[in-house]
Length: 484
Figure 1 (cartoon, rainbow, N blue to C red):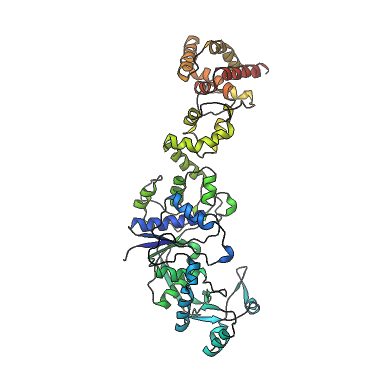
Figure 2 (spheres, rainbow, N blue to C red; figure 1 turned 90 degrees about the vertical axis):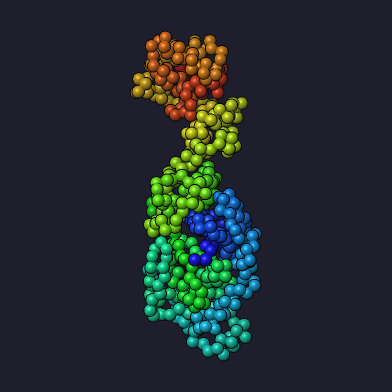
């Protein structure tokens, strides 16, 4: 086979949907695994859906995720332009559509909206127009007369109404459809722009694309693509259709899900590397049970033949777990740079934020989780005294009150409130009284945090809070317990 060339051809219609990111990733991995080329092409032929700034989002997302294209609007590889509206201005699509008309594989259609409305049929609960080939019967002279008169027109593909069309997809295998299901789809619209389907075929051929990666929703259109390739006498590329991505309820992942786009996920505190890793596993499985991959490891391991036909579930719980693993493995300085703004949202006091960050680094899955873990440093929350009960430690409100009263004088006398000094002092108290460490530390930790779960132990928290604040909170605990 010739050099592998894949493309990512997004429409600039807004944020990068997870499905689009997966398409880009798989196209990139297929190319790079084979030592080939990854091309970026902007498909902006649908001018009504064009969103200002969306092209910048595409560039920014590809750069941040590491999916660096070899050719594109900003990297001419000799087969440009790489923006379809620019290609349209050069007349590329109309030129090739006219070639099909000359071959009898396409025809001019002058039907107006009223006539097309009259052709509507209801199939499976949906109203669709199945064109009746009315304009196919026009003579060359009639067509030319209408063109000379400036009548609006489209150019339609001339598909047969009998027989079958078969194509092969690398994931779904051989698929055969009845030709009566193939509508004469529009190739050139009345505004002169090509349709998505036609422009794709022309551009993929002219850019020597060998592998076409796209979502399984395009499976039903593939027979029409194949008929275009055959009509031109062009080699059909390798088709790789990706399975549907669903939410946990097995419904198509929608914008309303709150995590349907790359930007959504980053805004929610996920790391780019974790998102890329997770998206790679939405429809593909490695030969072993490995789950954590760097992008380079994905390049080396990716074999599209191990993709699944079944829908891939976007399991947010798994993504959070994976993100937590990436956070644990992060360099501390890099972690702190991202974590600091979240910390400053809930802590305004002059506390050692780096020490707090070190305590919380291995306990969070996404960065916004930080706030709920550390907000008690700023202010002791209201809490229920039932939190002093711990069955394994055999503590309750009564024993906790006794213990806090017993240890308060020791803590008041201490001047060194470093973690080590506090732990040593409390350990001496524990040994003297014949208690177990947890039996004493549990009520202290509860008193200074007001939380069931904390990112650190009692003495670590007291070191950060300092002597004055720690004693104040322990006295508050004694007061609360005394009122029971």
